Amino acid sequence: MTVQDEQHARFRPIMGLIMAFLSLSVLFFIPVPKIFQQSLGAAVLNTGHILFFCLFGFAFFRFTSGTLLYRIIVFLMVVFAISLGVESIQSMVGRAFQWGDVLRNELGALLGLSVFRCFTVSSGRQLSLRLTWLLLVMIAIVIERLPLVHEVMFQHT
Image (cartoon, rainbow, N blue to C red; front, side):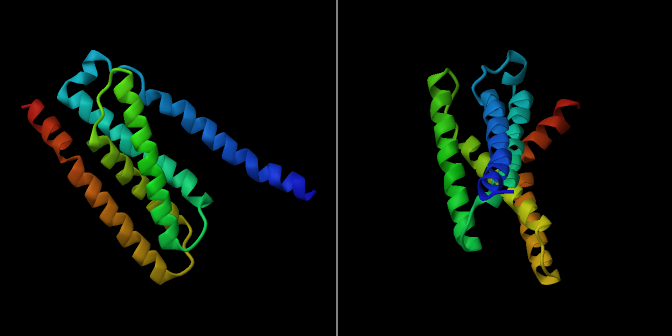
């Protein structure tokens, strides 16, 4: 296998990931159906931000380089820029710009990169630190999603 073939072999999965996320990102721009405009439906859609960017973080964090802290900072800045772009475009197509969505995108990206880091463990000590970080991110997401839990619990009573 030549060097050029190796470069193409590494480039294909990246292009596949980019195409998959671009096609899924269309969901951020589709008008929201009436059923989802109520509080429970909106909460479910908001959880989609976390899930989408969790997958994004898991898939794309591996392509960053540098020290771990630098990689995390740059990656979160890229996610923030993407979030601002998505929210700005949404405001132009009839949907509202929401800072809460930007926060959910960042939390999802943190969760995704935390899960990715847990799968790339090299020692027991690092595993415990990574699992602690993952737990803290998950607690932050649960706290952010508490209104959804409240809505579900009190809507059925």
